[in-house]
Length: 109
Length: 116
Image 1 (tube, helix red, strand yellow):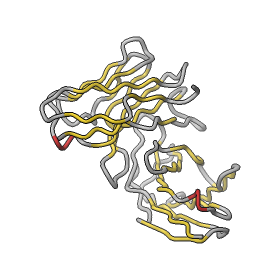
Image 2 (cartoon, rainbow over the protein chains, first blue to last red):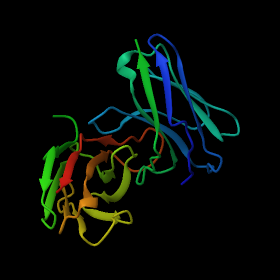
Image 3 (cartoon, helix red, strand yellow):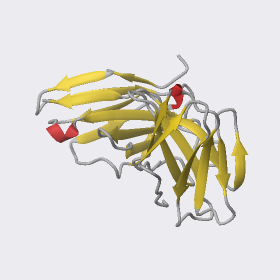
């Protein structure tokens, strides 16, 4: 599975848009890009998944350039409750999700 | 309860004891996964079942770790002769099927194991 690189931590303020970029230079043709969110003392939670271009749901948007070597998770107007660790995963099957250390997002009032 | 349920939530074991961690996946979910998460780290894959078949156990750290899912629903992760390095959160996840767009894994809250 492709290795991913993302920032260790990010800070933001309530109401701002947060963009977390993930690098995956070795992504394979069949690989999808998936983002999970994890709050303290809870298991990860699926946020969004995409293959190319842009995907949007009620929680976030995922931007994937044409070369697919990176992707950006966009959280619009974050609130304190968005403080969590965000993981970028790349792969085709879900039988072996490979998590990195993730990005710790801290939202301040 | 519509989610993945794990029990116990917390477990303290003396070094050398055997422990058993239980996972109740979402009803009807074919795939079940176990992960180990150390403090400050991302979850690490341990093993995977499709129904009752254990298709991948490459992540189990030693032969002290054993997982089963005999009837294709509830799963148990057993750790024999626990060591301090086994202290971690053990996460269980299930998914409706394997692979493809839109397949997502649903995680339980985990069992925090502390070996003293």
